[in-house]
Length: 211
Image (cartoon, rainbow, N blue to C red; front, side, top):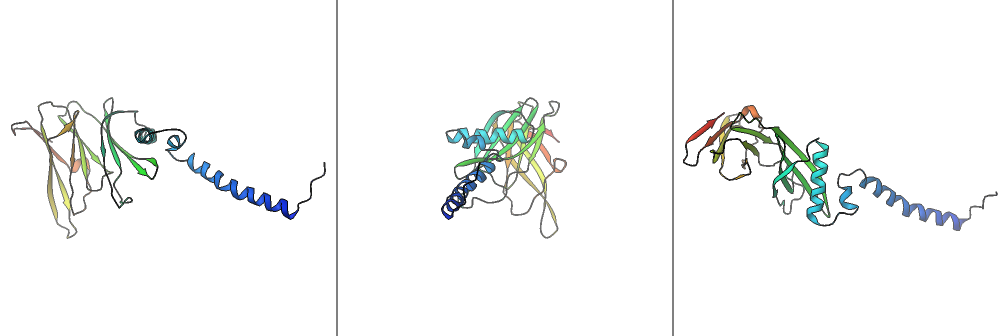
């Protein structure tokens, strides 16, 4: 079968078809390599979109799927690209494991974020989890003693001048059996579990536990 000769008109039509098809193909490839592809391909509703991103994040970190204990929305306002802050955070429980999980909102889509997890030790009244994905700083403390009504943490602060300080943060509001302790410091803080001192107090202020 003889091939039809390539005329200028046919060449022009083929070029137009390729110019249209290439961006579509690239868009499909990008979408199938993003965690929120399920959102784009049929999910409806903002919470459903965020739920897809949450499941994708857990899958990436081989966690769960965990039970959502609470969610925290955080608005970055005009600075949508501020490092270390996400749009929504979740506290999750999966058996003896607890996790702090973040997801991000960009335009019409929710995108997966980060996840930190700790295995609970029921023999300890308080089990801390240092949260990495929070701009100012946060520690999630799992509480195994129902008599503890207030949790305090103490941690070192490394200043630019080279001197070391101790800072404290307190939280008396808890969700399920977790305390989320947040702070905002001008100095940079790099926290590790071994750097923390955790204290638990009864409702009357009596010290129950100190790590």
